[in-house]
Length: 215
Length: 215
Image (tube, each protein chain N blue to C red):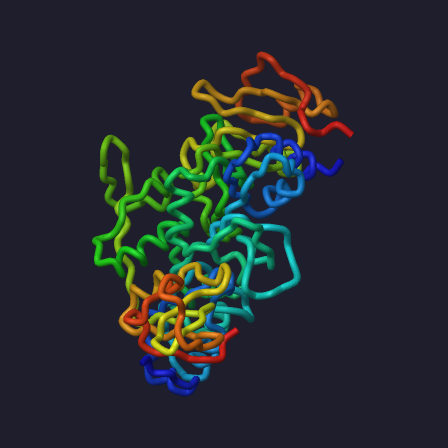
């Protein structure tokens, strides 16, 4: 299975019935494809919509946060950017899922700039990670073998101590006060391989096979 | 009744060195005809305030690509390669602002407030040089209000009084910018006799001029 699909499928299991969820660009967007319909999860996009639906033929009128033409589901609504970020910053979003370049042992996140190389900007990410009740990081475990889960982020931060859960193609890691807890490991890898690919210390007490990736 | 203008009239309201807020999110809800009208003048050295840098050939990005902009205040510039190029050539200064902060800076100036206190950006480079204020035991950054000389709005439908409602996700920053600028020009796709007062998003006193013929 494609590593991005593994990550997306696993994250989809984190949502509870009726959750209001914001999905970032990239792997996070793919999570929408694996959400169980019975969960009645509602998706918010920071450009001003609750209840965003599948992509569509272009109408110019309605786009998602990646600028792609999309649809609105029954019960949805539109609002301006100040209201959208009141929803986000005000703690009304249950879960935000976003990609990252680096995450460190205390849950600090770097995702918006590689100085001198790439400066896309933070967009809504800084508000999302500060405001959402739960922050899930969706990313590949390493960058071509170079660890992305570090003792301390080297890139400029998106936020300090805000990540709650890190989901990669190798493992699921929870960020708690005392550090990073290895919860689940993809059966295609060993715990040792995960430790090798992770710079930060992992607390290992009760590891189970990664959920959601059978078949 | 508002003054309905033609594209050529836009030249009367723009001049070199001025600050312009342009509505839209990745050009969705940006006033393409007003942007063309500005490009048809010879104004330059503009300060543009917009959610993002648009695309090279779409939205506010067209003004940037054409070299008319000396300063851009935005949350995201990753979709327009011209922004990075011009920055490297020292022809463009970019100030990156978290999206929710940008929305509130604009809203607060239109609302007559002295800025806002936000947790977004704490312990990141965004906080550098800014006052930290503790309220009810929690630390916030003081972000100052942001205004401009001119607002160019898009994504709207007007009525004969000059009231506006917006279509889909094209609302985004438009209603906030309508309140934060000295002169406000709205590009609308159509003019109806009267918008249901319950549905008006931008009330007509905020709008100075209307250009008909937008998407």
